[in-house]
Image: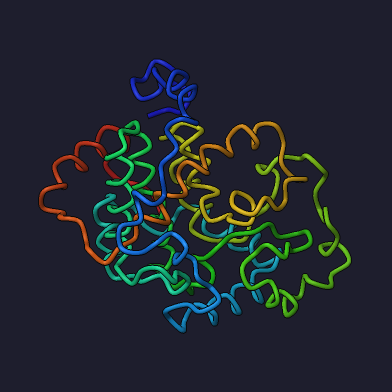
Length: 291
C-alpha cells in the first residue's frame, strides 16, 4: 500500500476521523486492566533489576558516531528476507530488558496493543501500526545488544534533555562534553523538524524505514517516535520541531496509551485472532519483508 494513494479505503475517511480525534482520545484507565496508570513506567523502583543497567549502557554508548554507523549498516536491509509471521516467531523469544511493565514476549505485547486499538474502533491501518510497532526489535536476531535496540529514544548530536529517563547516565557518554554535540542545538537548527534530527539507534527508526511505503503518515509517526517519551510525554526538544511535527504529535499521543497501558499478564488468544490478523497483514504488506 502506498502512503500517497489517497483513494485507498483506509485513508478515505481520515480527514473526517481527524476532526473527531480529540473527542476519541482513549481513557487510559479503561486500557490499563492489570494495574493503575500511575504504576506504569516506574523507573524509580522497577520490578526487574535489568532496567537500570540497561539504561546505563544505552546512555553511555549511544553516541552520534555509533548511530551513524548502525544506520549505514542496517538500513541496507540485506540481512534477511522473511514473512511477517516468521519475524513474529522470533519475537516470541524476546523479553525487553528496558521495560518495567511486562515480562511477556513481544508478540503478546503487540497483540495486546493492536487489540486495544481495534476495540476502540480505530481504522485498520492503526490496528496494523499497533501490531507492527515493535517489529524492529528483530534487530536482536542479528546479534544486536538490547541497549542498541529497545528503550526510550532521544536525539543525538545535541545536548541531552534532563527529561530523558535516567539522565545522569549521559555523563559517561563521550558526546556529553563534546563541544560540537553538547550545545542545545548541536548539529541542528531551531525548527528544523524531527525528520532532520538523528535519533538514538533502535527499533523505532528501523521499523519506520521498513514500513514507510505501507502506512499513512500518521501511522509512520507512531512507529518512528513512539519511544521518544521526552518529546511526546514531557514536552522536551520542542525547539527542534516544525509545524508538521506539531500536527503529527497528537497522533503519537493517541497511540501511546495503547502501547503503554495495554500491557497485562494475560496473553491474547492467538487461535481466535489469527484469521483477522492474517487478512489484515495481507491487505497492507507484501508476502515478505527485507530486514
